[in-house]
Image (tube, rainbow, N blue to C red; front, side, top):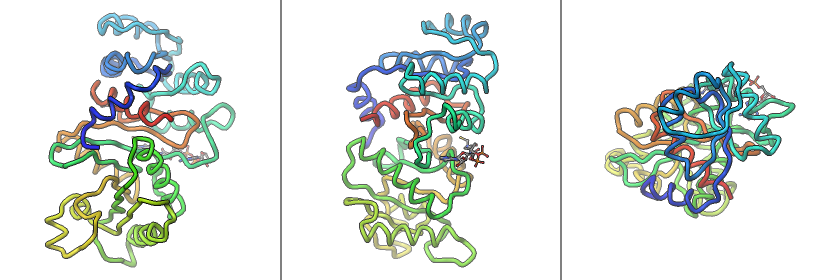
Length: 294
Ligand code: COD
């Protein structure tokens, strides 16, 4: 896929769903929800007194579940999903760790027994196709086994969007194995596992690769790295949340990218990017979540 509009078109072909939104008291959240009104019916879990004037300003009509505290709102929103009153959930102003703790709640959370992980989607004017990044949002310092789960989750997402050949770059700061850089060993092991078919057909994993090699054929030629993934990656598997989050935000802000983000592996899709996102980014995140529902 080359454009975010293709993901939006896919989402528009799905049935409209009910989406619980935790602490949506912000113009950017409400404007994003208005843009996505054709895709999802929002249920706003937040402070009614703050919401009503903002909703009037934006021109959005929606059910409100009155919860003043943003952390309590995350828990109520999760309960709406686990009780079947909503089909998916989105983070508004609740901070990410507390929102995720509500999603992971042992009693009423959205656990499935699988690892939950984050996938970012980006349309970057300087790149020839959509670029996905995982995990720049949830698992702080994943070990090798967790990286296998993170990769499998992201592969499920791309397959749900219709990909049957997926080029994955497991990135690090260098292409050689370095005894003091464990991420280079993890990347090499993932690459070997993929060669042996551990991630299914049509999946190519190359690593360790510098980010420049993953997205630039010229860099690969200069550094004499021969791989079908070089300069043509669909999915970037990052070593940890810090490097991935910084990389993704640098691309979004300096690279003028259209972007969206979701958590996968839960019993329902979870829409999650940064609190500072624009309405357009909220809209793309919602479309991305909807497009991946089977
Ligand atoms: N998938 C499934 N279960 C999980 C996961 C996961 N990814 N992470 C934790 N759990 C389970 C554990 O097995 C355990 O049962 C319980 O949840 C608590 O685990 P802890 O002790 O690791 O939980 P926390 O609350 O200390 O941390 C979980 C967070 C998701 C809150 C934490 O990992 C986090 O803050 N992640 C980064 C979020 C962030 O700031 N992102 C960047 C901004 S977008």
